[in-house]
Amino acid sequence: MALVFIFVPAGLVCYIYRRIPVDRDKRRFLKGAALYPAVMAAGSSYAYGYERKQQVKRYYDVTLPAGAGLCVAQISDVHLGRFFSPEDLRRLLQLVAADEPDILVVTGDLFDDVALNPQAVQILDEATGLFPKGIYFCIGNHEHYRNWGRTAKLLQGTRVHTLVGRAEKVAGTDLWLAGAEFSFARDDESFLQEKAALTQKAIKNIPEAELGNTILLAHHPEFIDNGAEKGIPLILTGHTHGGQFGFFGYAILPMYKYNRGLVKIGSSLGYVHCGNGSWLPFRIGCPPEIAYFRLKA
Image 1 (tube, rainbow, N blue to C red):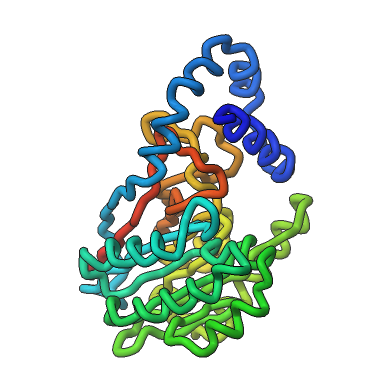
Image 2 (image 1 turned 90 degrees about the vertical axis):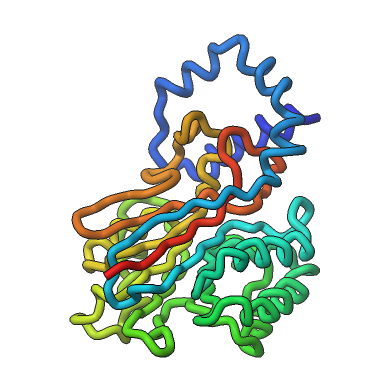
């Protein structure tokens, strides 16, 4: 059964995201590696019972004078449901707050269970007091799958800053936070056009001269390109789960242009978060993470 959880979903992911380039040399290697199933079987109990529950903290210094002195924490891809309960979410938020960041950003795919989403909204609202400058949320694809309209209405009654195609200036600072919507375009040309339009929509109320004072939140990692084109210094993304299976910091199944970690484009810095939960109950060489960005002058 453990192997079914590993191989079947991995195959489905490759099919669903078929527009993403695949490294065919690695595919041939994996098909021909006789030891691969045995290794996976031996590691399945570790991947399910240990690594997926170990939240790793990572710290980065980022030059962004508008927010100098602030610390921004990021979580992503919690995927509330069978493998991540509301109480797990509560503990995660407390763990994030233990390092005393000023802002928490959530880059999508948190609300992934219709029955549990209302409780999760309440827990997130209760946690806003742990972050002096607030909690900011941008939407992922799974929120769309789980009755986003209902969850959006619930969030309206909270102190959570929901950034869906819009931006807000952080109170008492010159720092802007913008949230892009998710692109569901399949072919390359439509995808490029749509994410460019969604980026522009997210930053439309930010004066052009202040784009250098902005952090862009987007679920899909290729929005890093669009943020860099606009001169936005920091773009925070998720969606990939870091590849779910990794080796020495690299994704074994690199299905995306950017799969995990830091991406430098000119003077802009992008980050692809490895996620905190998953809809697969396994992680190998790719533990869930909490990322902290300390903003410097």
